[in-house]
Image 1 (cartoon, protein in one colour):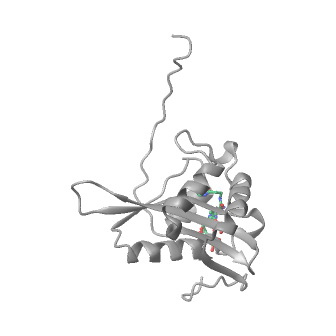
Image 2 (cartoon, helix red, strand yellow):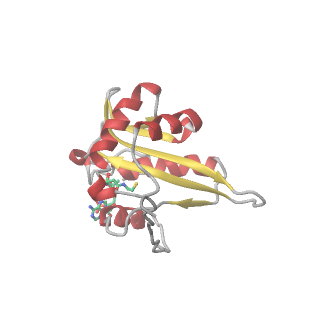
Length: 163
Ligand SMILES: CC(C)(COP(=O)(O)OP(=O)(O)OC[C@H]1O[C@@H](n2cnc3c(N)ncnc32)[C@H](O)[C@@H]1OP(=O)(O)O)[C@@H](O)C(=O)NCCC(=O)NCCS
């Protein structure tokens, strides 16, 4: 990707802040991208409330990649986490998704670079991402952006229905 933030192979793709009119398209693209088989997650689920509540609370950290005004080909949704009694704040990139027809064109790279820029302006000191251990595309992508120290995380369940 070029330093000015434009993708080399798709010159018309632009990164901008999400508006309320983008919410349905973000939700529907997310439904295609975050399929339970590929990106299931026990503690986070992709649904319309995720999109609307993030827009209600932190719209400044919702970015979209679009062609023209209408066609949405990717998005990055994040949040800033402040810890009590700590000077540190963390930027958590919660959801990053790119339309499968536009993968490997630098779209996620452009979204991430803009997100990082926003985090720097918010004086965040550390960025965090999480994904499933078998999501190799995402892991490679995050590594290409400099993320290190992957930590395994175990999820456990206890069925209390019949106890
Ligand atoms: C992961 C994802 C966001 C990457 O989007 P993308 O726009 O295709 O990524 P980019 O084109 O910016 O890739 C930049 C670099 O990341 C790495 N990368 C991206 N996808 C990769 C893949 N499938 N395999 C290996 N490396 C990959 C490469 O180093 C790539 O550079 P290159 O194309 O010059 O080799 C996209 O595959 C996606 O939407 N996946 C499903 C949702 C998801 O898993 N989101 C992340 C967790 S929330």
